Image 1 (cartoon, helix red, strand yellow):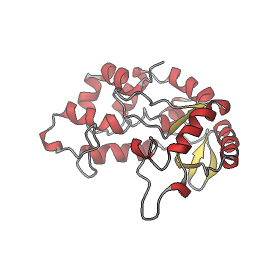
Image 2 (cartoon, helix red, strand yellow):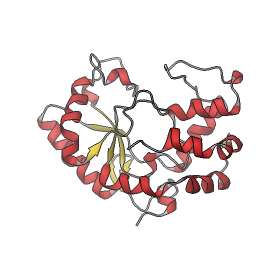
Image 3 (cartoon, helix red, strand yellow):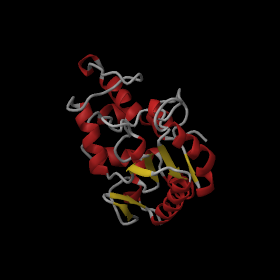
Length: 222
């Protein structure tokens, strides 16, 4: 049974360790390890760059972006001068790249950002940007393999629309049997309760515009 605290990243009772500091739900882990083995047979070292992310971590990312301690990027991945933005403009700029704390799919233990460490050229570091996974990028072959094979393990990509509110993320895969259930439970009312309880920057604008934020930046189109 999924509780509100599990849904919003404030509990870890639903998780097991995937490896290192990465955690997922048990069935997500089982499916990912099976897909990892299949990928290995095709010459890929499928690894997790990020899996479960708790509320506190997501809150830190959000508040540091809002306060200027971390860069805020425009839709073309270029830094913005946040001093020129209204509260709403700043919230939307952050939401394009970073989930609202309490509304991140990474809270659920069903989401994985994937890559192949052996395909990163010497001197380069992982960026998790679309060009790495598209034609000519060093993860392009891995990306194509996932497109052809991930559904066999019940994974899919939730962020594929390039004109959506949320950035296009070809590296982000989701374990559908569990994430679909969580999607149905995450509602504006759940998020409103989190906003009222927690110290989230931009809270006033977010509460006033929550239905819009939910439609554009949280709910994944069917």
